[in-house]
Image 1 (cartoon, rainbow, N blue to C red):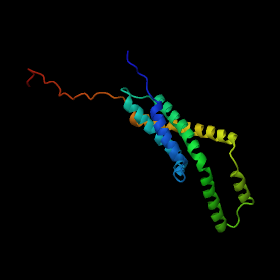
Image 2 (cartoon, rainbow, N blue to C red):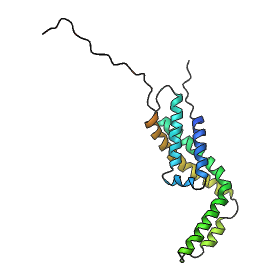
Image 3 (cartoon, rainbow, N blue to C red):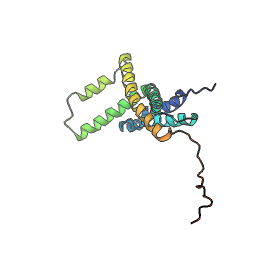
Length: 174
């Protein structure tokens, strides 16, 4: 008996991990502002990798499952990689707001106090809440990317049939 199980996890780990790392890096993470583009692209790439390993075509549900796995893995990778970069991102934000205050003298009252308060210590509750929200958002966009990936790469693999010329009739001469 043949084993027809599809391996969704390995492509999701590879593509989700890569998308999570890129999503955590400063300035590259801005691409995710465009409808979580890293996540959608990584999910479509994961579906491509899954489709290369399966002899049959993929269904939309296969793509959605691959995309959800990719999105959740990307959320975990983004959170873990982004944790040490939090201070760097906060420093960039603070410098940006300081430059903005030079050009716009009417900044909201207390903005510098708010920024210094948010740069406080590590809170496990906010860490887990952020991970949960990120995983939910990335899972939704991952499912979308997986369905898009199935429409691009998940077609059934059918052998190409040669075209035969039509048979010529004998004896019918006009």
